[in-house]
Length: 550
Ligand code: F6P
Image (cartoon, rainbow, N blue to C red; front, side):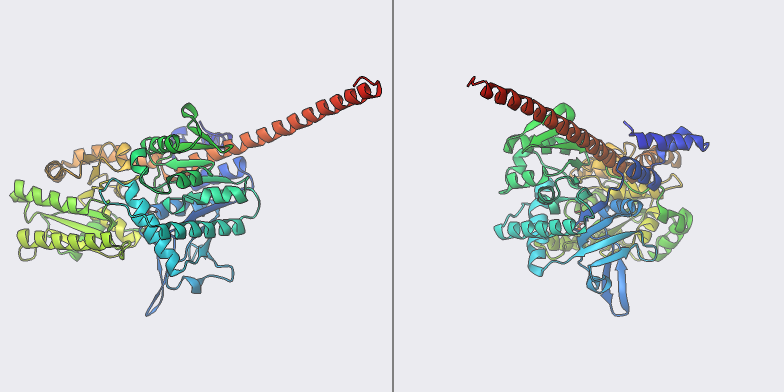
């Protein structure tokens, strides 16, 4: 499977006295850089996403830098750093304009710059229609099985198309030559791959869809379903977290577009072009640079428990996510209540700390969720709380990565109970944070991560009784069993880190580029062979004519 460059990297590890095992597991920025320089020489990597990796906001005491709560950002950031690429994203921070140069660029990460962030500005109308409207009221509920009805408005679609075009213009403007590698991220940009393909036919466009893809019956309700599929098939490669979602996509194409599908090769030929459709499970940075700078588990436990006034005999369960109806936060509260009903001895002995980063807060579905979560938390606290004890602590605020990792380290249990999720990187981050090999992960069977983190307690978030039993199992699990479960999960995340995710896509991209170069050579050779035949034929013609044979 490994490309020549990847094999070379592995051989070098051996030469340096490192075991092949270490080489195989250590997918690192160096591995990635080697693949790029050797297999894709001079390729410029351009990442496109809606969310930017660094947001500058205006505060009373100056400009504040925020790293957004986004799995996409935590995965792509180390990759872009490793490739010294260009990241194009919507500049949504209140001080974003102030921080860029005359070409709307800013060098990041701040303090130790290694790549360029190119900001794209959107009008209020564009933001409403493209981001809040079509992307988050249309595609988001369409792709997640969370029983929230998608809303499709023609005006949102128009804004979505216009913003995709604006990003295509920016990609073309940022491309240093005709053949960049463009990594298009997510459901905000379904039309962008085709728009790039039309303007830069030789670019390699790798599109990664970070959320689930529904079955073709569900997908069929989108009024612009053919346009979305056509747009995406401008990509050289389309990636999903799981094979299941890749299959759903292929089925949708089969149903709505005239195309040829080679299932054995996972390839779709459409409009004279071939697109590979593969599963690439996304992951996180390993080793996470940040972890080395943070307090260890003991120190994290002590400081967090002090901050929230937790007694020594109280277990700490945590949930960390954006406040989103796909994340199953209410279901988690219900599981806690069910536990208290079934096992009242746990009242007073367990606290659920729910970190809920504000997200898409102006949309009605999110406002409603916000209110319901607060109401339910309050109810539980009134019903089961007592002086100095609140079973639910809900903090609906943005937390930095440092703060989030400290919370993971302090937790006895981490609950990831998404109703539906492409992957869910919180599950992987929790595992990465636990270098003490302790802590229990409860993980929804409807999160892509449950296909990889098999030793987690896998739960159905729609079943409060089952979840409460899993909670009990987590609360009473011996340290030895915690270790037996945590160790293989850590190995899994270590071996399949984010560099491997990006590396696999880049290796496939390199194979495609080589194949297209071979095709070009073959086509040129065929052309000149045909031209020779034509010349011979016309010579014969001329002789025949001269001989009066016609
Ligand atoms: O991973 C799915 C995703 O929608 C990303 O595209 C996005 O960055 C993240 O969740 C957070 O959502 P938002 O950018 O809308 O706050």
